[in-house]
Image: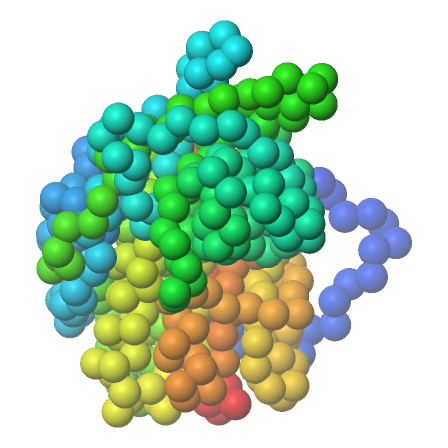
Length: 461
Ligand SMILES: [Zn+2]
């Protein structure tokens, strides 16, 4: 995946398309109003790909602070570092905004086949899970493939460790077993729940992620096993073997911890109270280094402001970057922002969250009015040179969502071509999966979109 490319490109090279366009490819008909933005857009893209600054910053973040789960000293140290770095970049109004965050701690954990022949399995406890008693939970395995099968098993669920062996299709389709599985199984008397990891088959990689306990149901521990181990357990059960498992987890909550969103700006030169917000979340799960989820989104959106600053581009409206805390297991950063900025949410012109990876950018997802969509589509033509001009059917992100909902703010997300869900929430989420040129292009695309929306005479509506 990772290629060490020379990424110092001259402006001339930038405008050579790769792959070259077919001779009969229709040329997008450029809107005339875009003419004044061609030069700044070209400069932003040129500056973005002339440096590996974003990749180097993301590598430094992961190498220095490691993963950044809410409540961890690593996250708080990274937040302090980001504030200092933003100031060094020359961003304005750099500050933190406090949020109390849940403090979940994984502790030691293990899963083994205890019978017929004992042997360890690869696992990761699910975030926000309760732990097991110190001696662990040992019980017979019951494999199901969906909620209907679980319900049909009825009384057979009682006292079992239930495995949801659900192949990954889309994240939205599959993640509901991780989120709701523990309470659905617990309601029928299961003593623990396992899921086949929510992601495409990898190299025996377990994927963590949050579970959500339903009110009024027993709270049983939840953990993920790898695709390979789920398939193996399935084969054993299919042969008629009675499989016994032993799950041990020290997972628990500590009291809520102090954390913060990091905010930096380029203040608008004419309408500083109108805000174009770009963002990524700075917290991560407690495995790997959270480089793709979502260090990359945080650094790429931050880089967009650094590029504007470097080129002395100060748009009409304020461009604000927010590095969110606690996306993964609470969403408290996004809620704190909505509440602290309630009075100015109506003056948010656009909110963008980048939390789908910083692979090759293809464009943006967008949710807003038809008129705003038409405008955004035209702006995206400025990104045709890097093939990032597609505007998808829907955009948003879990941290911007509370504000977007409250004030009907147009919402956007970066769309990319990459294997995000292969490494997401795993120990393999590290910087080496990210290509310097792809994060540079992602930063450049975000910079162009944010700049033009902040600069154009009419507000996006
Ligand atoms: Zn994320």
